[in-house]
Image (cartoon, rainbow, N blue to C red; front, side, top):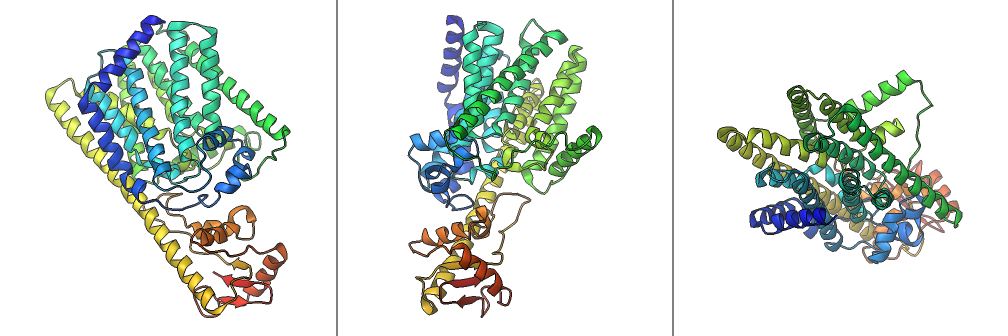
Length: 499
């Protein structure tokens, strides 16, 4: 145990005493997240902090870890700069954590450049924008990714070196906490298990197929314990009086279809998510997956160990675990594991290419361009969401001006129709979806979140009753669409706005 501590201390000193490494990760974090940290945007869910935390909706959907984190940090409303700064800092720390772990176990097998490659690719991978823009949970999601990685690392060290029961218990508890932050953190765990299994092949004497399978099943066993513990805690929360929510769809659909139909559905969902190549992170994921497949085949043949290829395929599929489990479309906001997957493959590619001076130079140039393109894409996506926010503000202020000018604004506002959905661009899913569009339909609650967005600008509009909302549905059938003339109608007890 003392030897392991010393090895980790040595690894920590290696990175923290290396100015090039520190400058590189800080610089890429600023390049990737600097704009959104200093130019916050209110988007989906960002008006609902009270619902998620004061009304315990976050507990109702089973994310008790996220609830605890936000309660401890006393985050009860949208906080510009501060939330995004913490979330991006945790991403950077997760990259450093992986570098320390790999350095300790690989010792001098990788050059410093390989770790810089991994960290910068991981930090800047653009798919993270899909969940990062959700201010009401982004700190918890990034912390969940950190804990998911840490939990598997603890398991790996205990399995290979320490061999103590408490090590497995600690690992299971860490994984349980990670799952409670965001269920998609499970994909990080699965990818991490596969990465450490390949690491075991390269560093351990136990390289037989049965030894690797034993490790994989042990890792899955610890993960399963974490899932069970998380479910027990969620059930206890429900027993304590928190009502289960049907907002977050976690339905497992296995059994609804035959085996062949289920496998075809899984394949179709994965293919659909991967063919969206106009979305830069998807394009990079596709290319690097191909590179990883080629490397795994070559390495399997070279080492006469085809478990490398098997594990790579498992690692690839782990990136779609939520979709596979639910037999549903791939949501990019659940794909937080993609950055880790891509980072590891690019790092290993750099290691192979760095054996020769010319290929090392070419690889360094190509990877530098890739990292810059990733950070550029992140800025484009964050800016796109910022422009959506500016458009939402323009519509909101214009609507408020028209209401105050000609109507009795003490009456409840009945929002009908469908506001513009967003500024769809770059092939993203969550990015730039209008808070007005979301607020109108959220929770089927009479447009409450739409009105809360208006009120966040310093106003005090009232939410309609169910009766007033039903009346609005009838009246809106014969009204024009906002902002046309006749799109706002005042009744005795409410004001109807039809989008």
